[in-house]
Length: 211
Image (cartoon, rainbow, N blue to C red):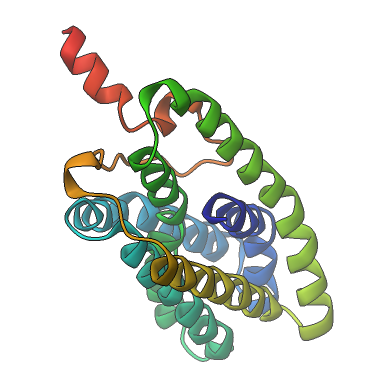
């Protein structure tokens, strides 16, 4: 579910966030800065959130991240042209949390798998992410058609709130992985399509062992 929702969000970010910026009143340079800050946020904030997830229940970090993205989406939707500086600050934090959902989901999956199952599982996650990346921009475009340009962030708020609710149910129904069984979180660079070797948090450990 985390992979699908991540695809839905990131597909819409790459495809429709520039249109949001244009309708918000930004010129080309300002739109480029907004997109750049969104992606840089995804690079910078992954590390502390991932490190925290190695020490705590990873699902609780995913819940916190998803809920934060939903709340930030509502804030950005209601900024509505009043403060460009606030918009840039918000999209930076928004990107930082949003780009963390997929690697957290991948690492959580790796916590529960044996080594022989990891390739098949990660392949399925890539397919799930791809499905989300196809569906997301379509759904987001309808939201923008009905609610205006800020409908993009209404869409983000709804699907991330849904993910937070799903994770909350999973936390209540199933125990977390033991700390000894957890793998180390590994950052994934913000891009449209994940690479399988980079998805496996164990691949870096294997390289170090071989060296």
